[in-house]
Image (cartoon, rainbow, N blue to C red; front, side, top):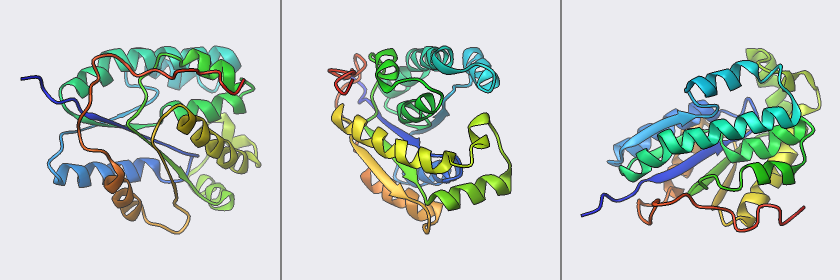
Length: 218
């Protein structure tokens, strides 16, 4: 009997919306429901992923977009697909939606990003967390800037706008998308809403899912 495949859930959003805290709470909720949970992140923890993370403030534009995509393909092959085939529910902190936002902020056109990611594994559920830009700015100021995108005072508002566009792009590619505003909601409550939307294990991950036309809006 073939082992049932798992479920792939991604969580994206601007810095300061509570992705990591929400992901931890979601993992606990789903584990309590009897699911085998594996939490991961992008850039990944591989040597290539660590290099990408370390150099993201120094490598720009298309070069960084290519590096991020290369790490994603490695992540899919080495970690994601094997875990999903084993029946795990995989929760990923940042994935394709972040590329559709951060790379355009870095001057890379969306069609180029989609072309690079044409053969990536699409999530069963893509969660995008958002918040009021002023709340995001306050949270970043409180914890300190972590990368060069935080230097732009208009960055939070632009990120919120681009994540909404990313949600529309992912929906057009056939991905189930859940957008949640965290401005006045606790990470625990957000995690509960996500947990209720996570699909039950099923289907097949024998080969990665692919967007049918990744440059449809070009």
